[in-house]
Length: 207
Image 1 (cartoon, rainbow, N blue to C red):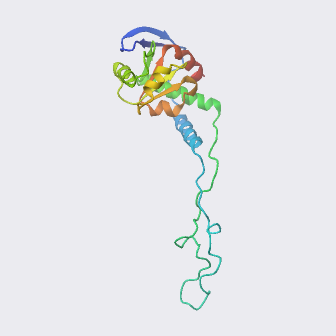
Image 2: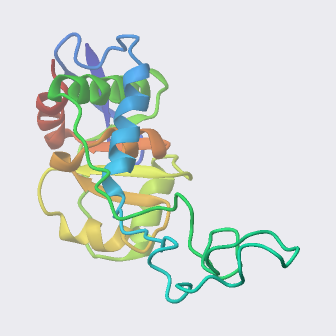
Image 3: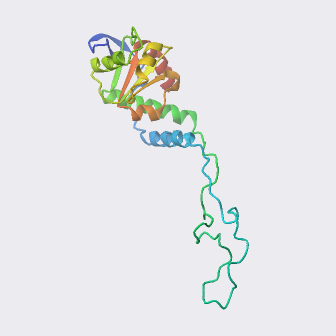
């Protein structure tokens, strides 16, 4: 398979060959859902906590006698039925973290990347070097590439100027290839990858 390599102004520079099957849709979109669910679950802190009726201060004395008042029987003013009472079946601190098999995660990553390629939303650029870490230069770069929506920029190396130039743009994320993940590939509309990072991307998603 051959991919077009463009310059910063969108003009075709060359074609680069990638291994067959690496960026081909395999029809396993259901794995995308599973991996995204895992990523979102692993982000959760799990610190939400409520007090049960036994943990709320007070309520040890029976509010009125069992019989003879004409009112419904009550054993505590901290019952979940009462204002100021405990919470029934509320959240307690827990660990939401879990891990899917590595093969599943890699297949989903390959599927997400292949979908971007199939939709024409992958831009392979010869280089992404900026002379200065200026936000307006990052904006100009995206505009020249014809991108005015959410964009994920992959990097292999530091590229400090680009990182600093793009960090003030709310719709742009700069990510090292090592951090490539399914959620970001699906969330951002376009993926911009410099030519020198393509080999590492292939190794990340290859079966």
